[in-house]
Image (cartoon, rainbow, N blue to C red; front, top):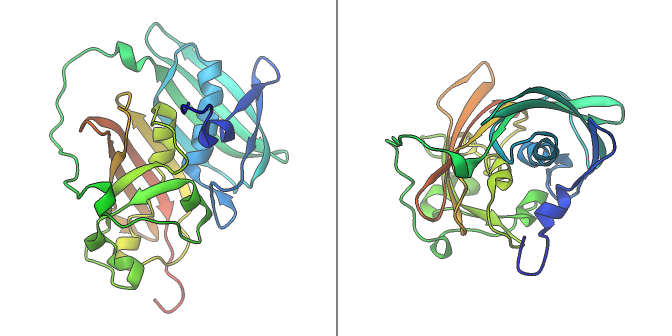
Length: 268
């Protein structure tokens, strides 16, 4: 919630329960790439329904399988509970549009504020200039009007036809129209950067997500989210992308891994 009421993101991920195991919602326009809603946004919508269906409040791990393309418009969410334990509950949510199952999400929920145990984080957050010293701005891609992404100028050569040697993206991210990060918005942010392979091959082709897993490790502090996304393996046109999200206090708040297809245009 912002100081002035619900944010656009919270409104556009609202769900309404219509039976014991069903919810309905709208995939809102503006969170898409060439008319196809972003996979992290679709996951966040399903996570809202999972948060109502399961007895624990926070996503701990969510895996999405993207079976068919979605489009802005009405959807139905169908829930199956797999387990409800003392500290973790698990369920499945099917997203159905126009009578076809478009995506399926399996999730474990818990209480991030109740996590107790040892810590060991060997990685460090990216060392980047402050957001106001990075390159940002809207692009023709619709979702860029919803997400405020800032990247260091030296890492944006791929936008000018000068790709680098590594398939890696780093930068700052927040909701463009306000609102502080929360566990559900981390699911969106985990799919909010351009594909890391663009840094190596340029912004070419379509990179459809096959499977996305996001692990939420902590409730984020207010402010910008800092992300690092890397692709190390591209084989047979299929790629993995590993992501890290850090909050404004330098705390690791989420990890992600995505499996996607990547095809270069003819002649490349």
